[in-house]
Image 1 (cartoon, rainbow, N blue to C red):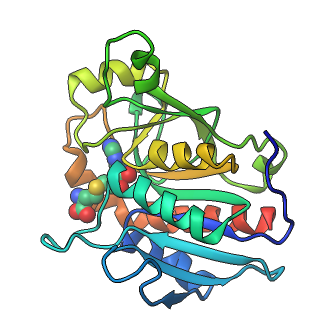
Image 2 (image 1 turned 90 degrees about the vertical axis):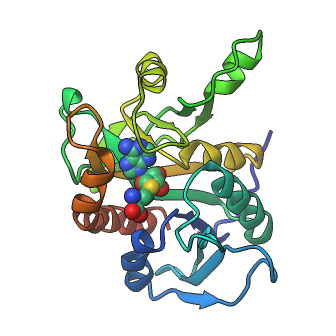
Amino acid sequence: MKQRINKKAPFLVIMAMEEEAELLIKTFKLKLQKKPFGDYLPMKTFHGELPSGRPVYLVLPGKDRRFKVNLVGTQLAAVTSAFSINKYMPSAVFNFGTCGALKSKAAKIGDVFYCTDQVWFHSRRIPLPGYDEFSRGGYPCAPLPSLKKKLKVKTGVLSTTDSLDFCSVESERFFDLRADIADMEGAAIAWMADIYRIPFYALKSVTDLMDIKQKPGDQFLKNFQLAVGNLTVQASRLLRSLD
Ligand code: SAH
């Protein structure tokens, strides 16, 4: 099916945590829009323009009303994507965030990965005909061979889970899918972009190594600022290059 191609159609950026987005919001001088999706939904939109005048919308899932934490994970990633794609009708969807990676594959804290091929789920298991493949996801990422030189990134395959720890059942599926990096939103956003047939781009910066002894949560907190700094540099370059 044909994509709607409008050269100045907006870019939509979806991120999971406010703290991840702060630097990008500053870089592009984005302004907060009040209640973009009505009184009840917690999502937040920041709006601005890229150098060519193209509108850019950065949408965050917002905070949990009870626990006051960012609504990380696939539920709000899907809701955020559905509502914001429907409202802003972007020509491209971007997901920028943090991830876990593998020391055994030479990944380092602060590496930024450009996600290639397809985005998978390694926390869904439905061993029934047809549903097995469905549970793995496998939603397309936009290929970007010529631009890669402008970016200081590694390339890798992203898989999504609903948990931060890397338990053995999930890691088995992760390796089976030949994934390189793990997050908690990518596949949900890529799925919605695929439903609307809009190109999906993802950059993920490594906060933790999943195959070392130190707990991912402790690594995450320690390495977060470094990872976000590197992520913002590459994300800004990607947006400007495609603008
Ligand atoms: N402990 C953090 C919680 C963040 S949840 C805090 O105190 O705020 C982890 C977020 O980082 C998710 O949005 C997810 O996409 C990403 N992430 C980083 N490392 C991950 C990993 N190893 N597995 C899954 N998601 C990871």
